[in-house]
Amino acid sequence: MTLQTPAGLGHPEMAATLDTQLENLDLAGRLALAAELGRAVFTTSLGIEDQVITAAIGTHRLPITVATLETGRLFKETVDLIAETEERYGMAIQRFLPEQDDIDAYAAKYGLNGFYDSVEARHACCHVRKLKPLGRALAGAEIWITGLRRGQSGNRATTPFADYDSERNLIKINPLADWDIEAIRAHVAAESIPVNPMHARGYPSIGCEPCTRAIKAGEPERAGRWWWENDETRECGLHVAENAVRGEGEPVVAPMGQPAASPIPQVSVVL
Ligand code: SF4
Image (cartoon, rainbow, N blue to C red):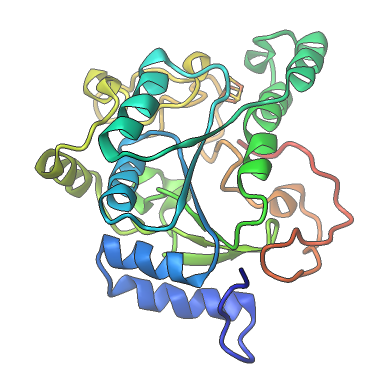
């Protein structure tokens, strides 16, 4: 499938147009529009906002692939929720796992839990367990749907509804960009959407078990992620432009759905 790009409109311009269009639609409308544009993949971490999106895809039977990164270090509650969600909505959630050779190489170099020792080691672990599987999950995709919200952290405060991801050469759509956590919780309650029971135990943002703690009253939603690091812009790398982090040039823009040609090797990024 080829992305339906109006004549003369480049991918960045198309993303800007979409950003305006999406603002005026409800969640189901935003997702339906995304699905019309080309092959769409939604990557879920099974967090509460991701569950809202999965529920909408399942309820409205939208032609959007739902994928998750099974890092091998997830909480049992998260793994259980994958199966519960599949059953509830009668859908398959595609699992993307890290390569065992990569895990072995990481462990040999840094130790299995070496991510506590340095930012570089942490980036390397996320690269192996998340970024490489993400690349496989998004292979051939033209639209990448995420559960990013502006209220999740200061780093995400300007999240648009649509953006052109030049690193991966696809359009990224964030249909919950303008939802706050109260609206998310109200929607989950009204629709009886299954969510991770850990949210009720002080975990608003849940990643890998060794890298997630409960937050204290008054802390930002993502304060429990990689809590031992001081950098307030820390991210998992899935939503950070690699070349921006490395301070290198833009990759060559390729046809939508194909990887952008770039002289930059794939390396780990700010996570
Ligand atoms: S969140 Fe932690 S365990 Fe998971 S991939 Fe990143 S560093 Fe590794």
